[in-house]
Image (cartoon, rainbow, N blue to C red):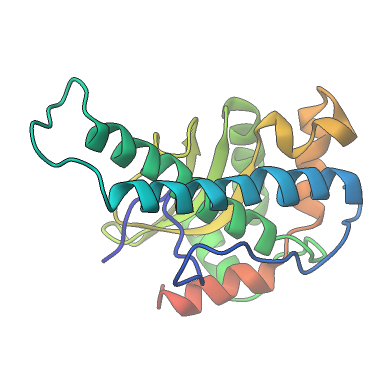
Length: 207
C-alpha cells in the first residue's frame, strides 16, 4: 500500500537511525550536517520509539475526537514517523554531483517540458514552502508533481511516491546560510545524488 507523499518508504523495519554516507557536502559544512542529522533527525527516531512504547499501554476506552491519549499519540506518531522518513530520504538523495541522469530525466522532460522548467518550479517551491518540497510520482495520474509540505504530516498527496526530498526548515541550513535560503537551495541542487533518485524509481517500479 502506498501512503501519502510525505510518507517515504524507509529501509528500516524498525525505526533506528541511519548513518550518513558522507561527512560534508560541497557548500554544506560538517557542523551543519551534524546538527541536522545527529541531533534533529536522531531526535525524531527516539520520539518514534517513545510513542510506540506509549501506544502499547494506551487506554482505548472513552476515546473521542476532541481529546484523548490515543488521539494525541496517533497524531504525533504521524509527525514523528514522517520526520524520520523525510529526513532519511533527504540525506540519502544528497552526495552526488547534481547532474540529472537516468530514467528520471525522461520523466521530468515528459511531465515538465524540460529539466530547466522543472528545476525552476522546484526551486521556487523551495522558497514558498515552510518545511518540505518533494518531487513525487502520482500513482493515479502516472505523472510527476512538485509537492509543498508545510509540516511533516500536512500537505501531502495520497498515492504518491516520493522521489526527491528537499528540507527547507531553517534547521537544515541556518548554520551555514543564515537567512539566505535561496543560496542553500542552489547548493542543494548541486549536491543531488540522481542515482539515488533513480533507485527509488526502480524500488517502486515507477514507469
